[in-house]
Image 1: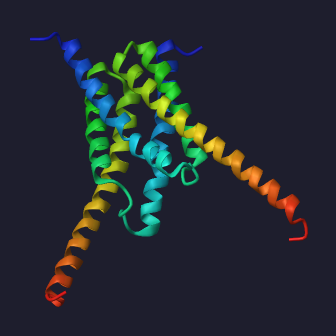
Image 2: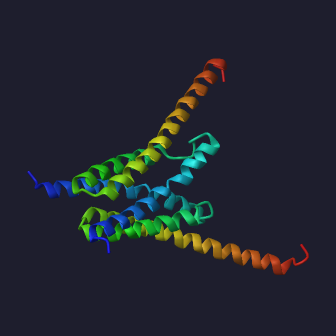
Image 3: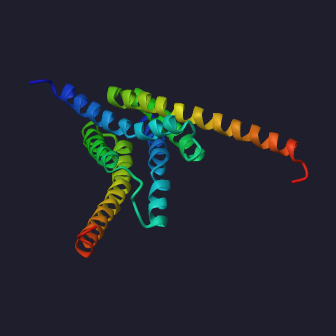
Length: 105
Length: 105
């Protein structure tokens, strides 16, 4: 029989896998569409901040599951945010191009 | 100056607010559309299971932030799942109705 702390961390890691995996469909969808236009910037910034705080919390209380879960989910969220910023930059460029091409519109 | 454990739980609660709030936009969208057709059942079932395990983990390690965060996010996810099941039931009813109304189609 495994010690209780090991069993607890196994439970925590299963929890971590299940909750971080739920970020995958969104990431895959963005990759497929090549655009992050339909995700909310505010929501993802809130999520990234929240996960960073969970990471600190996990470090302080010494929880390997919490640290692992948040390292992985921050990676997903950071990737989505990077795509989102690329999108915003692209849209701004298109906007500027349109504005200079058709100033009378 | 507050004791370190209190400060830590304040940090944990801010993390909890930020990460659980990120479920709100999806829930509000479903409420607005009156349908959960565009959310993935598998993903939400995974999320609910993961959060239930985090809840147990939080109880065992004695983390108020983790318990609070997962109670709230399970409520959101349970509500989305309830809407989703209603949708599936409705679609099945429409399907059966169509099948009996136009058997030759």
